[in-house]
Length: 120
Image: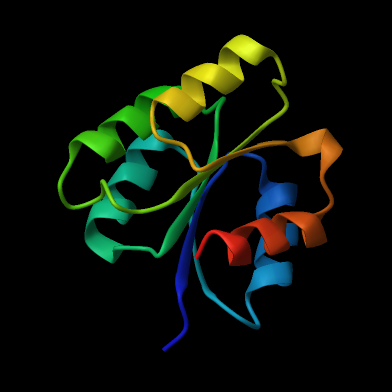
């Protein structure tokens, strides 16, 4: 059975590119809002979550805190992706339980796939 990756991201082009890169090796689930992502994390039990920081309804650090507070989702590795590369944001995400922090503009899709594999 393929491992499940949940992508919580509101940028449709990035979702499509990640899906294309991941679908041969993983079952890919997507959510475009934090609320939808939290719901899918609890019901679908993904093996890893790719989480954007800036979402329309909630910030990624809020979502990460909710995931880590819930026994049903606290052990799921979360790789955070964003365009924000400042140290304060990075520290906040890692302190909240994020496994990795990827600044989108610094990474190719292939490198993101490698990060996912390394964290599974």
